[in-house]
Image (cartoon, rainbow, N blue to C red; front, side):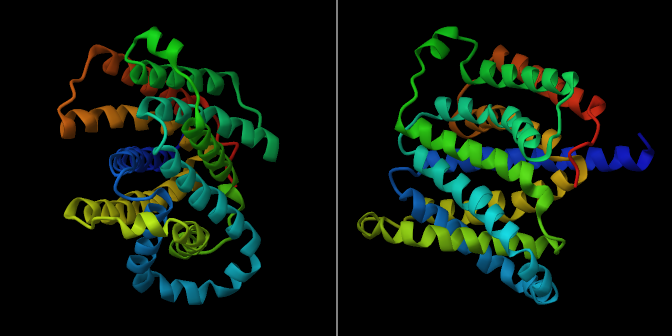
Amino acid sequence: MTRSTTSTTTRAYAMLVLVMLLWAGNSIVGRAVRDSIPPFTLAFVRWTGALLVLLPFAWRGLVRDAAGIKAGWRSLLLLGIVGVAAFNGFLYWGLHYTTATNGLLLQAAIPALVLLCNLLFFRDRATAWQIFGVMLSTIGVILVVIKANLHILATLRLGFGDMLILCGVVAWAIYTSLLRIRPPIGPASFVFVTFLIAALAMLPLAIGEGQEIARMDLRPGVLAAFAYVALLPSLVAYFLFNVAVDEIGAARAGQTIGLMPLFGAVLAALLLGEPLHGYHLAGMLLIFLGIAITALIHPRSDLP
């Protein structure tokens, strides 16, 4: 690796660490407000709020990128529906019906699914080292989620909420793999258009939650949840994730999803007073080791 390539890779992984921290917070918020905010309403407010904040900064780029947006509308529509609307709609919906443990275990499948999507869509074959790295990280995730207790894993049962989250997991893997087909437009334009597509997709579903919306209590905690999901895991995280995928490829970026349950445990300890244990450290070691193996050894074959 040249000095420039090493610097780019390091920056990309630093961005992804922040992204996974913000998305871990998103899952915690989605689960915490499940009894206060209907799932599709939360998704609609998330994307609408992000659009309103982004518009003053993006409109010049939107005008400049108008031709590129028109030419690439098919890929933009696909990415907006799959990676923004579908993933988050299924995630928030599923968190109403399943436990955080089940949800985190299902999301641990994303790195392997990204490799599968790369193979199916682009004929990218994973190396043995890459598969080994993904396996290590996945074992680390499972260790953290089941608290090193195999009985928890043996008693897990997949229900309706789990199937919803599984649909979201598949959608995110497809989005991550397909990011290479995005049209050559500015980052702000790309994020704005895909967020707009997601907001429009969520609108009829949110309208269908009218009775639940009428019973909502807009207390400070609910408003804070709206603000958080609209700003940090949306605007900040999507910008950084898209840039990182462009710099290091879908496979390596997708593998960092294993950091989410680890960060979720840390956030639970800081915010909810839940203790950290030895299995957290063991899981952390395996997750970071798996990521390091693919970062240092895997070639950048899945870049556009």
